[in-house]
Amino acid sequence: MKSMPERDSSNTAMRVAELRAAHQLIDGEPKILHDPVVLRLLGEATLQKIRDNAAVLNSPWLVSMRSHVLLRSRYAEERLEQAVARGVGQYVILGAGYDTFACRQPEWARGLRVFEVDHTASQRAKREKLEAAGIAVPPNVEFVAIDFEHVSLCDGLAAASLDFSRPAFFSCLGVLVYLTEEAADGVFRLAASFPEPSEMVFTFSAPDSVLEGKEAERRVAIAKVAETMGEPWHTHFDQEKLVLKLRELGFSEISFLSAAEAQAKYFRDRTDGLHPPRRERIASAVVGRRL
Image 1 (cartoon, helix red, strand yellow):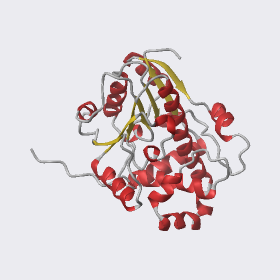
Image 2 (image 1 turned 135 degrees about the vertical axis):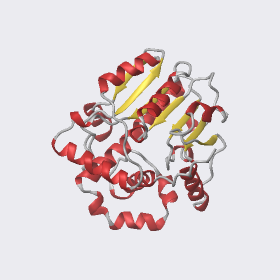
Image 3 (image 1 turned 60 degrees about the vertical axis):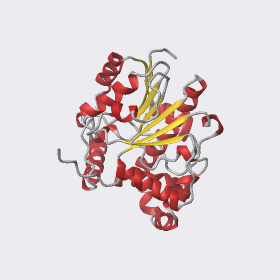
């Protein structure tokens, strides 16, 4: 059988890393996400480019995008800390890109086994940057190369040291929109197959039909940018139907981070223009229990 051509490393993942770096360089205090590692990972040339383009990065649509990127990581990591306190000992980062949690993990995460999942080219690019920056990969981290549009996520993770009989925490941030609905359902199904109190934090995109005005225009613009980078959007979820799907799979505690909650916890009294997304696009689903 003819082998499939290898994908290039993700351009959108690099743009996300640059947004996290921009937060460290040009936004105010306190940081929504404190990430000194991303600055080392990207290197001085990229950091200077960010400084030189501060005005552009403070345009409304990039401020909104930066706010969302920071919020989703902060929320996922706080939910992870709570899961660890409940006894969860495995952390699976789906579509890890240039996520830096593994290299800045706090003391409470030292007992975790961390699995970074991404396709081969992106994973190789990240590891090359880590090596070039002299950033050591902690011993509790395992890289798992899977293109889960073409390889079963379950089969790919089964080849790693992930223990399917123990609870795990999954993060899937900025990933589902790029998958087919079938592949996205496979991600949900996998996380739901783990024992309680396993949990998944994920982001999703609402259908075009619920958007209007500037929000709809911004969606079209961002989707076009992603498509020009060779990473088109495919899947959007209606929130009510998504809840039904998750409950059928075995998730019992499903919650969506509201703008009001995000404002109160992460954005209160900020003077740099960062703000919570208007729409609920960040969710948590816990397997088989009520919190």
